[in-house]
Length: 409
Image (cartoon, rainbow, N blue to C red; front, side):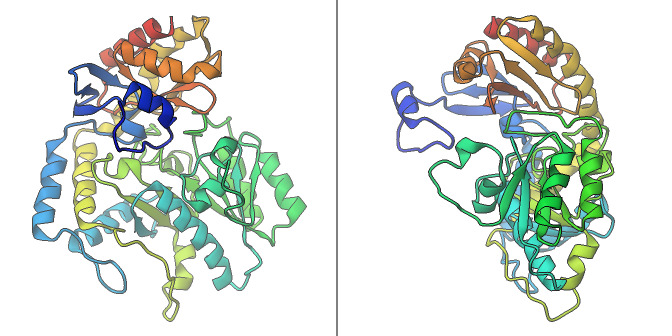
């Protein structure tokens, strides 16, 4: 039976009747529950455990930092030495050279930060009428006010009323839809366009060929900020031996939101990468951007991020994510032959999806996967999300596919 915990994104009546699945241990690509059952982790927690579970090196780094200085406010001119060093390290491989780094507590914070900064930037440029923020159908940008308003998942809006004015949505897969909106409302009103390189929680959809470059050019041509949401794809998940989709596809974002893979989920942390021309009005002196978070740039989290980045670099995990791009395609493609499967989507980094023929069976199939030793998740309309840790071996991808076939059959 469920206890006092209220789970996120859950039918708590169902959880209360069956009881939660309580995990107690993780190592590499596997997790175990309190009853000793072992599961292949198909989702890396929730897109985030890029280096895998049980990395004591990260925990040791955090413990050492907490013993020195757990955290201190980053407001005004204050910072911790490890936070300052992390910002410089991230700026060193930012998609846009010279970027500034604004730390947050997670992905939803990063999106709201980017939304506020996009509007404030235009005020500083003498164009306060540019307030409209544009998202896409199927998109997910976290669950804060701005992210909920920008997202294109209708059920996530239900019951809240209008949370944020001046937000609109265009078709997720048609660049001309964005162009049409800009021409219809006027470029002088549009502040920014928010774009996930891969639609994540909305169903795991890869971008159509040429789409990302086309929307980026539309934004340039019409003086609209291009905000790339890399909370899911950042820090190697996109493959191509690249830290970010923005690097792999040369997107040169004005703003880029990140979180998850920054610490591999060991400690909550997010970061917004801000291109130099966006930061410039705020670095000339006399301009206050009254925004920030108590735990933004948390020293313990920064230590976790530094250790996590060390592991990714030392073990060549960017290349391993590229290997998974082909391994997952080879292992999962045969599942498309099953009657219960409508489509298998693969081919871009350590991200794939098995689309159910009957989307309503998503929750049922998640339980079936669990019975066959896979911890998984249904995203969007019945898409079984596959986003493993980069340390998953070729043999394990085959094992994952075999267990999924047994569940789906």
